[in-house]
Amino acid sequence: MVQNIAIYTLTSDLHDEEAINVSTHEFLSGLDIDYDYCGACYDDFGSHALDLIFVRTGGTEGLFLKLLPFLRSRSSRPFRLLTSGKSNSLAASMEILSFLRQQGMKGEILHGSASYISERAKVLAQAEVARRQLQGMRLGIVGHPSDWLISSNVDRDLVQQHLGIELVDIKLPLMDDVAKAPSAKAGALLIYDHLSSLVRQHRLDGFTLRCFDLLTAVHNTGCLALARLNSEGIIAGCEGDVPALLSMAIVKAITGVSGFQANPARINPQTGELLFAHCTIPLNMVESYELDTHFESGIGIGIRGFMKPGPITVFKIAPDLSRSFVAEGNLLRNQSEPDLCRTQQVLLLKNPHCISYFLNNPIGNHHIIVSGHHKAAIDALLQTMEQAAS
Image (cartoon, rainbow, N blue to C red; front, top):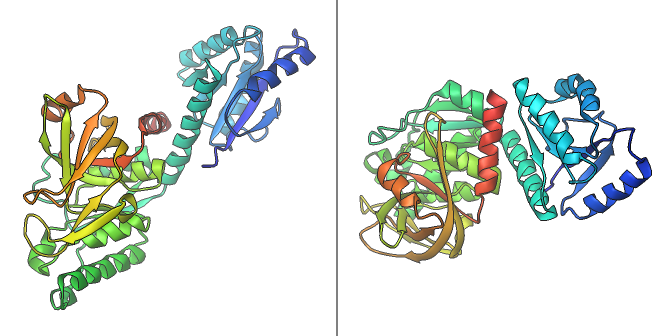
């Protein structure tokens, strides 16, 4: 990923410039990030995913105060102050951040080991790139949310304000040709064609489908179509679940894949194992897959996908965007029990207290699973969105 990080400097005239330059080179050379070194020239401040103000010495508080009106005119994002721990750099940064807080502005000091600063800078840059990707996104609600999603209504104005996403209502298209297809797979591919056309017609970045209506309307399922569309970069969710769709959009902005929309089927509070299942999964998330029937109906096409065991992240954002759940863990194994939705994953989350969340205070039933550990980046994105909307 292009990190798109810039480093600007604040330096007091009281310090020896040559000595500070040597110290700066030593400090920055230890960081594992790609950056543009802009020095004291702030002309393009605000144009990067992350603008770091390197407070190189003490006595720079007044310099920052003079710069502040210009910096505010270029960016409304929180100020990120970089410190080396030398020449009273940290003390000056604390004074500056304290002033910003008093004025109702937000900021953060990046201070610590080179590895910590590097990782934090990468995460902040990644979160801003993801936030920009969400801006202007158009997501369709094809049909209405399924009747059983009684806790999943969203405030569209809030979604627009916080995420920059437009939600568009779209009628479920007629698919008369699907029922006449010579096989279930052929019919499923026709559903894919119809949904692909819908995406182009409405200029969508993604959608959620009231898919169970297809069972009675055309005697088939959207599972294969959604699996293919997700693998092609179109966010495609099930059951008209809008909070799950928004969660998938956030996951895709961070990781580049939509994630696996699934619900817990079983939880073992004693071992901490959770079994998640659903009948579709993005084809670009699995090592292999098999075609089966849709579980609940026994008709159409369902996907049994096998994802590589290893690190995973589970995520869900609340319908009113007021809270979220994000946890890291491991995919222990895939399984194929006949009495469950076809893709089945057994997970173990790092934090054992997560079991309490699912059993006492869940955000709906669907959650999004994605390979890799991404909690820091998702947390940073959610914080960035909250700060941008305030």
